[in-house]
Length: 114
Length: 111
Image (cartoon, rainbow over all chains, first blue to last red):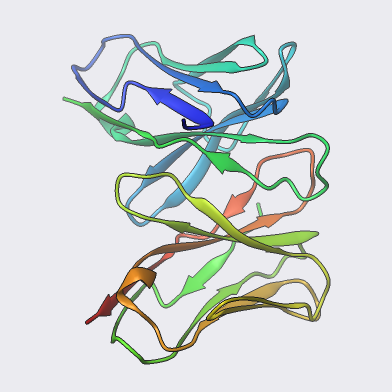
């Protein structure tokens, strides 16, 4: 079974719709992250969380919000989706006990905003 | 903002050839990681280098961290089709934040 799961794996939506992407992990890690990946731009950090009460903005947080419902769950919301949010979205985890911030990624969600 | 520049962006070679991928920055990183990503999947960690000048080997893959901890290279010996994928380097400037990723090198090994 996968340690980091993401749902849905694919989603097509329309401009202006609210979308939630969900991430669950069984690794027992405290830190969770949301990245987006665009061709030619690489992976960019949207939000990250070190525990349930800690939420931090990343490089490109505008237009996104997150919720850390439990240690194992971290969801990403697009309140009003727009076409330039079309991208691959990845959730990742890391263990607070490791010094090097090595990350474990989920399989990704491909989001298309029409 | 720390930037990591990867080169080349694309590389297509024949099976059995050797290749080197580079990851360069003007910033110092406490550690640098290499990930490999296949289509439809998330990146998977290959290695972490920490000490300036460090060399790590993973079968036919050799990873090196620059002496000043600003750059790294990945060398693949006798490449095989199974090495095909997107190779990403990522720097950790502080354990308090997420990683800074390079844009990746798309590697294709042709049989």
